[in-house]
Image (cartoon, rainbow, N blue to C red; front, side):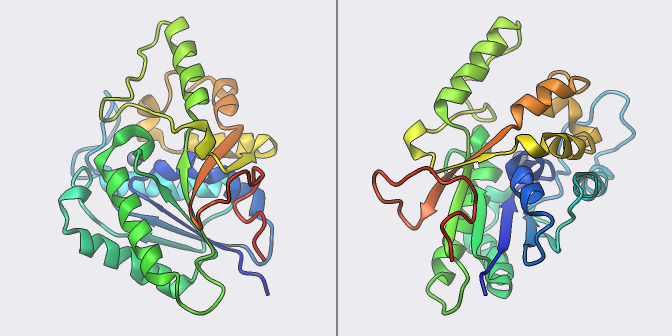
Length: 263
Ligand SMILES: [Zn+2]
């Protein structure tokens, strides 16, 4: 039987709302699809926008609730959702082997066919993103030699540089601040030739945006105009992934799904 377990390992509640939500929605109805979601932190150090009813003490629990509501709104809740409870903004300060061990414990139990995490760019250069991505890579490398159908593919969620540059130009035209990819916390892209999987999410953009909207405490961070559904739906039409393992063959065709080409 084919293994259709997907494990997504991210840093903060809302990384997942962009990260792989389209792929989950596209597979949601398949009976053998299993969705495992791991968050390194509760996002308790996130911004609290003016007037939002949260305090520094309550924000982590609120964001956890928002994340759970987001998957309900998308229409497919995780089969297993783990919160590792590392400090928001401080994952890089945790002994690296502790982070690797925490991820590996879950992956070993789940034997996912595909693992999604951040690449070394962290999409935003966020140290939490970069650290959880590196720890997941390390856990994957430790486990992939095990017998069985797990650990067939390790991918990094990324933005192609050409798309990043187009978005940045559009931002400049709209008078919004532009991203400087040399700066931490600014979006960045990866060279287009690193993109090995492009997923067409147009059939599920409304479901992705329904999920994004549930991250109510973070809407001001996630979008310049959270009321503009059309703009959000355009932004999430595609998901792009680089394949970290196995090393892609030069000239291999672009894949169109996380499980594309797997037995
Ligand atoms: Zn994040």
